[in-house]
Image 1 (cartoon, rainbow, N blue to C red):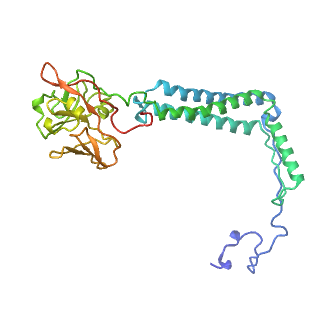
Image 2 (image 1 turned 135 degrees about the horizontal axis):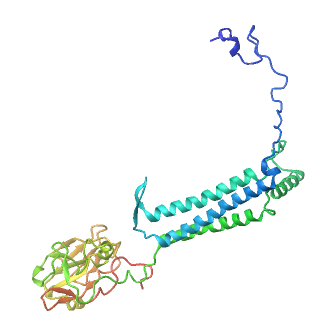
Image 3 (image 1 turned 90 degrees about the vertical axis):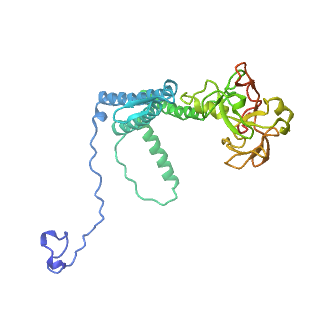
Length: 350
């Protein structure tokens, strides 16, 4: 569409409608200047300024209380507690409390700072001329003077209530990050060194959930067992079975090479930890003729006829053995715990 076809009322100002030529204004980049400054009510009424000061201090105080609530949530709510909160549904009570309190702590710091800047700090616009990238000594002196003037106008020195509550809020918020270090624990203490196995606990078949008798274990067979009293419905079942899972094999006594292994067995029935000593995978592959067991994860191979020593793969030490016997009812039972911690080595093991 040509300029002749554009309606006259839609043409930009300064365009010649007769010839289509554009006239240039005398100064198209003239400085429009700044609008006149309108004082706020806080600038002329000290009572209004006091109200704003109390509002800012109140928000900073709420931030401090929210931070305290964040820390308290770690103590109050257990990790596995689930609650119903509309409209979110069933959520973790701990995660919801942590998110709510930390969000509130950060929000009220920001809201307090914004309200402080909009109501109490100076709102006079200041225009500066453009200058070279390298500041001159005069400019540096002016910047420092402006900074000092801004600090004075902010009321940091005069409005001690705002200053003190802001410092309190900023000092408490980092504590939230320190408390988060709890997720790296708790410390294992001696939990990795012991299992549920104690003297007198019967060996329970993990498939039938019945106590094992010596005649239930055939030569060349592989049976998995767990301690008596442990149920799959228990809250800590996975934690306990990860350490107490047992692998039972029957070997002809004359084929057992390790003297202590033979002493800790019963009629050739030996019990070793099912947990690989490399990275903790469950062992489940057994070769009858060689009495070797293989970890399916990284192919660590152990000789069950020779103290479960490592004959191949990345595992660092043999499988721990459980000393077993038979009780007066004819069932296989443990005569104590494993001779050493099960699973992979850990930093404090020594």
